Length: 452
Ligand SMILES: [Zn+2]
Image 1 (cartoon, rainbow, N blue to C red):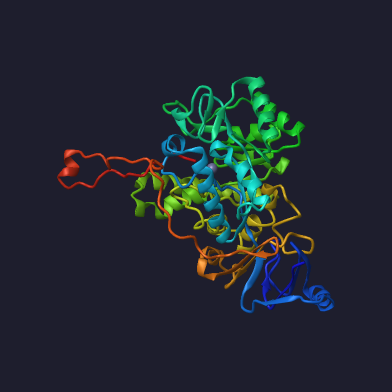
Image 2: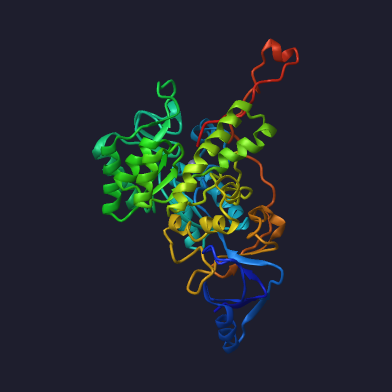
């Protein structure tokens, strides 16, 4: 059995506690002891391997609560829905899973995937067939026919991309049961979405209260939790009161929504990274200034309410929306913590807790991962630097010295560069060529900003 004593590190345990200089003893796939107990126990064991990590931080592996491992960084829903093949998507997802793990992410939740690949990928990783982070997964996201995150690309019935349209009580129950039979860890519902030309503007609630109660009851009867993509106060109230277990985004809350959320202590995952990346860096990829300002406003407007929720005891979870062209795998998984510190005023240690201990809930592994404590799985990072003062060091690949998954060291050698398989991306003629552009005016922005 693997017996390793990690010495001379500064340990961030994931609970929000300040770093401590202490040893960590790993036996097999678990943390056996920390501090003086670890050293005493190690002294009694023959053949303990000592890992001296002087100057480094030892902390739980990051958990990314919102990572679309099957998407392969599309530019648009068109690309994702109409340019992917089942087998190739699964093979590509396996490579992307390894990349995510190599960036220090030892667990992800993938709430919805094309071809329901998340289930297969999770099982292949658990069986040791491929290497990747621990995965908790949904199947197809559930839509009603009026809309969700893909506007008019959503069909009136059936499967499209990462989602499936359900019509009425019987179909909702049948689909929930079908997914649970298939092995999902979560049921995902797109509760709100953009409906082109709808008079209300913004995201419209596309599920009735009765439908939300139906989906929660059908899943809960079989012991499976439900999460909802949800923007807007009314939808948040309806989801929480229907018994939903996790709210994604939860932006645009009012006081009533906040009250209901606090009363139920329903965890919230804001998923700001996608918006923050466009707001901060969008100009470099040609994103329109008005859209960038809109995304910045959504973060700023929501930050205060989410901070009040956090202060009142609502768990905040970190999710990065990795898997789009704006959030490529391996680069941005730390970023939500940076936004929590900058926009919500959390301390770095609080933000780390959101990405580790609290996020074990998204993994459905609370008390098993996300903490450097005796009895937890030994999913650990060795980082050259102090994330307790600056979480962005967790986004610096050069500082990530080791990743341990279940006590085993992960090979951090990057894969050779890849190309895109033929027909994999949407190709365009380029931007619109008006006479003004021909005469030298700047072309319109090429970025598709379909909201995830
Ligand atoms: Zn998403």
